Image: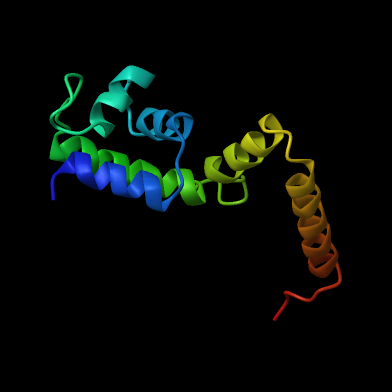
Length: 119
């Protein structure tokens, strides 16, 4: 399987939007725009297709880890994936989902403060 196909499959599996892909490429140290990401995602027969090198995919996968869980140096900072998902819900006006997230975080905070998660 080539790097372009892997990128497409990861994008689908992780429900990554183009904005997410751009953020991940930036974390990987690549200055790409929306058109360049699109060129990686289209079929090889498409006129705008651009072959993705394996080294670029490896860097992307390393950055995806940081994007998904945050850095080791700042493990308490919410990962970009969570922040972008919340932002996306707000942009779509999905207040029901945002309320559910509020409820979830409130319950987690209450449990933490009451010592539920302590050994």
